[in-house]
Picture 1 (spheres, helix red, strand yellow):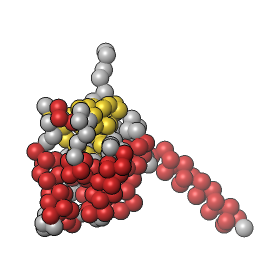
Picture 2 (picture 1 turned 90 degrees about the horizontal axis):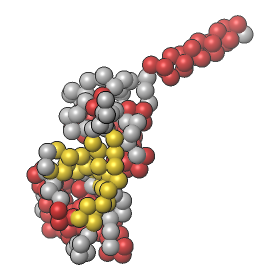
Picture 3 (picture 1 turned 180 degrees about the horizontal axis):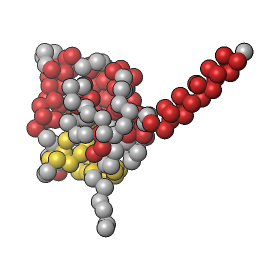
Picture 4 (picture 1 turned 30 degrees about the vertical axis):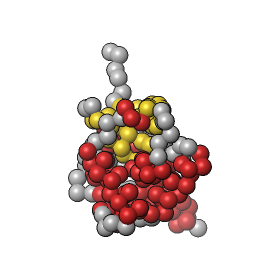
Length: 187
């Protein structure tokens, strides 16, 4: 019985240490809206796991380095987010996003073998977005982006944009966006 009490005490101490020293994945992104975290990061966390314990951990050599755009965790930890609507025709997307969007359309509409053919459920995601857009005249949920100079880098939403372009833009369409940007210090 003493041994069980000691084990319970040890478990309690370990749980307290874990709480104090290891951040949950959600804690790494304190300013990220829940909607963005759930649509973008949560599926990848379920699929490939999350082994990081503090914001100073190095992403090099991990799949997360690519997913998080070679941006260190401590930078992501400080990004703030704004929900905006921007006229679609005024947006200048990053070149690799344009290529990804073209590849998605090429694969899903024209049956071409493209880099997106290897992404899970590409055709299903594209078709579901296209059907939603036909019915509602908007994308199912905002895309997530960050500004890189004068260009917008899509971090989540290439399938939605591809479906929107394929279905056709309503005149004057304003794209719903979650925009990540650095926290501005007033001091």
